[in-house]
Length: 433
Image (cartoon, rainbow, N blue to C red):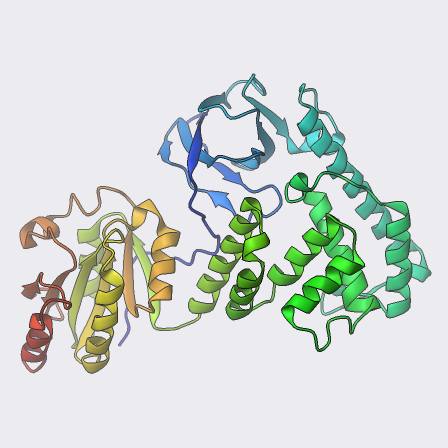
């Protein structure tokens, strides 16, 4: 019988990418304020994990890039955050009215949408100008769709669709009225621009030329888009076509192989984040993997055994993400799980999952490590555990066999890669009551 720990089930949907630090950004704020840095165009796909979180400050490291332009969330407030140049250390005091220095510019989203940019930065002002241009374009097209029957659309299952005639009219009008050429290096940093060209893609390929890609392979589709649209807009649409919502993991991986050599660093980060998110989404559907979390490992285990009404014994598997051999170890353990699933419940405890929960989950999904997974929330959860001290858990993986009340009956610290001692012990205790 499957049972749950008393802690909440965690399902992470956001994708967190690894970054190479070049600038350390420290935000000073009132006590217990939540600060998040996200991508301005793809916030769900790319967000940055704080290096340190304190009651009155949050510290990030951001990668070296030609552009340092981010969406900043401070509790419920939204800002655009611009880093000028490539400074090593930046400090932003959010508790004061400070909104710019020689190193950074902070603009509230409401001021951004009104064009109230007072900072002396030509690049940031240009980004704002282009974003506002496309915001106006989208608003104008929306008004036409709602007020003029020639461009009208209908809602089908909460999705807006056009017939071929109205989509052609709207597309041609957009091309005529809202052409705007700008530098390619800005293409992934402008929120409204991305929304606009996704709309153009839908109008042109989904409703106007509905059979454009019929019978074509990936290379031919790429060439078709590049022939139909000017550069750099064609680059946005190629990326959108091959990494848009609704594609399965294998399709995304094949697209990445096709485009990898031509993707910018920025595009690679986006593509990899989208692929990782889809991998998590697809593998999360399996019923064999359950994620749980707890601050106190001892309390979590006590709660588990207090509510376990089954007659099964348990195996606690202590492991660490920094051990490069764990993929092989879990592969070997999979056979034992299948052989002894009637006698044992398998509980995995990743001692350093607090460092990067999403990376830990991704590893678990990719290796299809079935069973319960306890992810400690705090860095000292394992170190302070009396259970760890009593069992002298120092090396990983470390296996603990218990009866159905949680009493330890045997331990094993020799990996499966080295010997079959764990298997012998499982076999020996599986017949004992």
